[in-house]
Length: 113
View 1 (cartoon, rainbow, N blue to C red):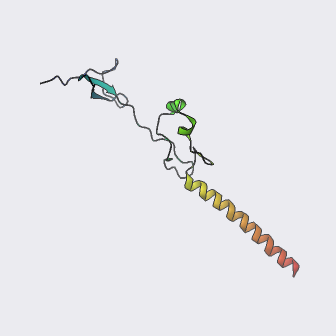
View 2: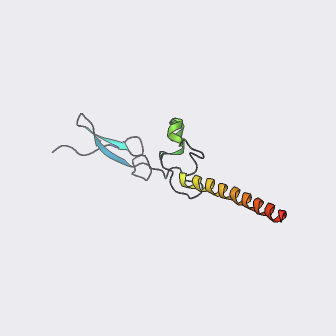
View 3: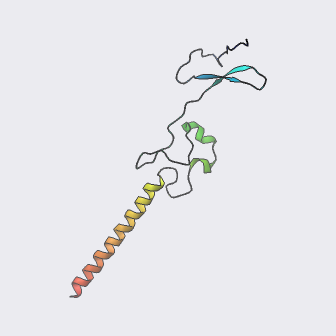
């Protein structure tokens, strides 16, 4: 029976939360230990706090090595607010402007009488 034991990478012998390791079989048939990196929650919407689609979930320091297109979404408020919240902002602003225009029109009609 082949040997299934594996030596951990580095000088840290404990299987802690940040130093998880899993045995991986190489193409040469050898078992080696591979350290697993923790998954982050990823960027969140500034309004509704949901996860932003289209942006990778990485550690803050890892974003430095990414291309610009991998860090953002090409839209207004791309990397900080989700599409639904941006749409709500636009609709809200439009409705406010419409309301102002209607108020002005009613005031003009009232003054004309």
